Length: 121
Length: 108
Image 1: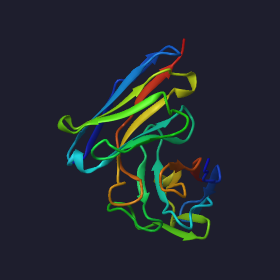
Image 2: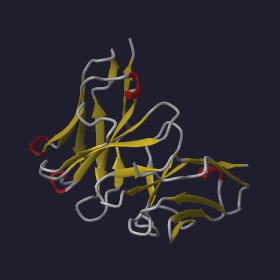
Image 3: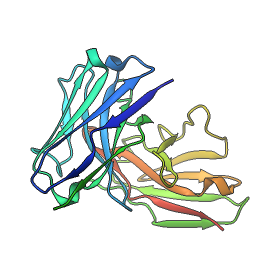
Image 4: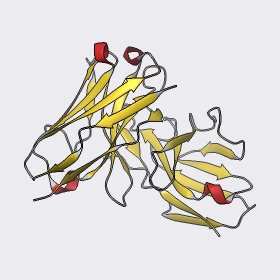
């Protein structure tokens, strides 16, 4: 069965950095786009970034552009999010999601359970 | 930037029909998707491509589209359907992903 397991969240000071990881299993990872989506405490869902199957196509939301970088390692079935220059407003649960963008418009059929990132001094 | 607009809340009694709308200028050209999220859980896809239902999603969940508005309909609402519901689509260039603000469904 499809499994997505995020890790790497935690408490970080404003201006700091953090790298999130997502371990995928139960499907052919290299056949799918992947996305990061976040949810601030008590707020709605916000798409962060997606990456194509080979990693050559990447798009990110304006709110994180220039600060966050998505990447993947198909040999390790893993997705990453490097977060730099973190701000208080980046505090959220970060979800890794399988993105159906190869065969259809971007949407998300499997989600991980999320990892909490807290940006605070 | 492109936005999808949902009502913040909808309330229905058990057995009634709940309708949750989502409006956006690009919806005539872009498919919409709907997710259900219960407290403390990850979202679950309940409708894709405006009207299609993934396997395992009850038949009482359906979707429709008309112009700039898409609608999630839950027929014969059950207590277990109480959750937040989010629509999702893309901008007119099909590049950027957008979520609606979410609708809290309360089963009275």
